[in-house]
Image (cartoon, rainbow, N blue to C red; front, top):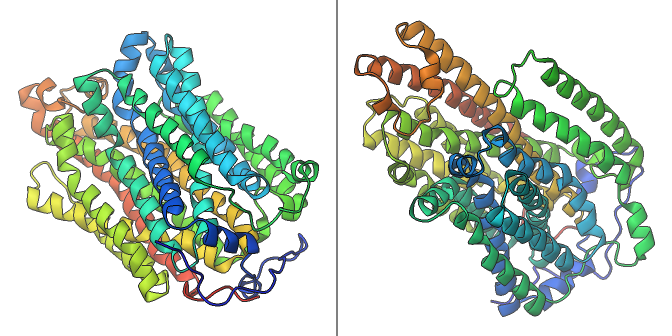
Length: 547
């Protein structure tokens, strides 16, 4: 498979610069030329070299999704072995903190330094984190391993779309981006199921050990088979100037801001009440640091991690919002639908994974079809619009699930939603690559990745609080003869068998009601996506950007 350019190459690439006071207008964003570095990459990385590179990207996408979600089913076994129930929350928080706090800086790093080296370094850190997690003798060492995995995951996630953008033409990009996003979504959906099966038949440590050989293989393949990947800018800047152009001040503000926000949202309603002084302090400090961060970014102008003028370009702004919402409602449904099968329907871990299969299969097929469809039509908007409508209808139908809902309904509901999210997940990434100059693409893609991760963190925290509060209320009002703590202190798996017979119907109704209230959050987010699609410009992926 040889990748060819579409249209004539430009004689010279024009630099696209603006003062920090001047926003990027829709017309200006259309006027950027494709960089010579991208042209050289497309001609040099073809055939077997590109196939190997893309295989590595797909494997990276899969293991990022898997490592993000696998911890959900492993925490009971891990806390039992380490006898550290008080550290349970940190097993996921450490990963999320390291990933979200460092995500934005990678946009500038990939723009300034070797993409190949950065991607391999990120995978090395990711593998090292997996080694520590798998072999951890104590809980603190395991937490350190999770933090290192999150740090590496940020670099891998940021690098995937950036490398695709620098090694494919604009017309081909929807296909490769859709496949990459689809693989990540599938891994996110099946991560808990895969790790649960591994832990059931072997040991929880094996769930992390399996990452290591694949990680080493990916690093070796990239090192030996992939040549230098040229950037579209900064190639002429010396190392000292590149280092100086990194927004270290913004990074220094972003890290503690993210730390306070993530800790506040993860602890609120779980470890501490929302009214606890610790939660209030964390959220207030996060708000103050956010204000300082925005001021720093405004003053940094073109050299900021988050160029604020970029968000004035409407396609970028709406793409960020759509990406935030898409990952958030997928995270809610992916987390709470298995709980419905396990707690309300009484399914085992393995059975709930099989019952969840329709969504994953529909998502995979539609994600793989969405890229070629976008390339064939020439516009990403139809795929995004139809996908958003399908997932809104699907998520609305999912809110109608009840304890006695038949398989014909819960299978078809998942298929409709899966088709929608599969089609709608990647178009925002294609949109920003189409409307922005190539020099700004890495930063924009990382911004979308950051919005994606934050969507999951924030909305899942809200969903968890809604679920616990609604479940407590439902149990108190609908099952007065039962202590709510008897249900709240139990896991979803095998819940029916632990409830006295005389209370089972009421408890299942209360549990189902709380789950439906959470699923309404996902429905609201999908509706917001439908409206937001109107803000995305219609730009053809079949035309080169004009200089």
